[in-house]
Image (cartoon, rainbow, N blue to C red; front, side, top):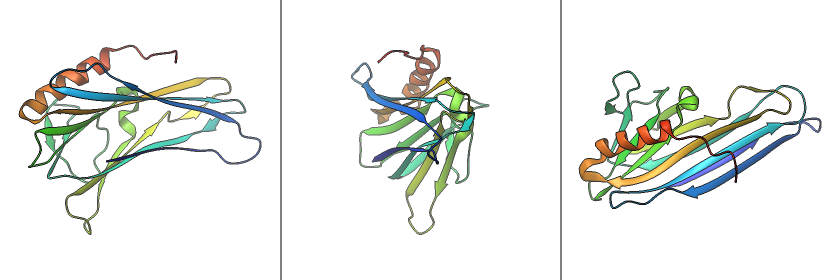
Amino acid sequence: MRTTTCCSAEGPDRRIVLEASWRQLPLSADAVGLELLVAAQNESHDEALAIHAVNRLAVDQCLLLDNLSGEFRPAEAGAGACQAVLCRWSDSPWSYLELLHPQDQDEAVLDGDESEPGVIGWTSRLCHGALEKGVIRRSRLQFWFVKREQDELLAQQLRQQFNSASLPLGR
């Protein structure tokens, strides 16, 4: 698995302060997780910011959480507005779950490459939209390995916890 975080800002008169940090989430016998917290602050004029978290995995099955029904369905390339991606391997007792906070879910895009069967990728745009001078915008993602036997139920529970948790404001 590869996770990449990048920031894009052009020109000498643009100053954007970016802070990214990882934290371990509470452990259980059924799940192990990390959270990526990203904060961006613009110190010049209104700017559009492009911070992307990009993932590519070779998996046997990939499911997306349907935001309307609240149920997981098979992934399709080009799908967007998704808060959860659940990936499975046939030879593993664990599944991979990635959760995008609801404030950012409209900025998720799933892609597949026909030249690489079984490889799925997705990009989540964080801290999206125009960034006013002095305003700090925060985004977060959670990454989990959950026991395969009840992964959809665990994913729903973790999503509920994530959605109701306050955004940490400190370091």
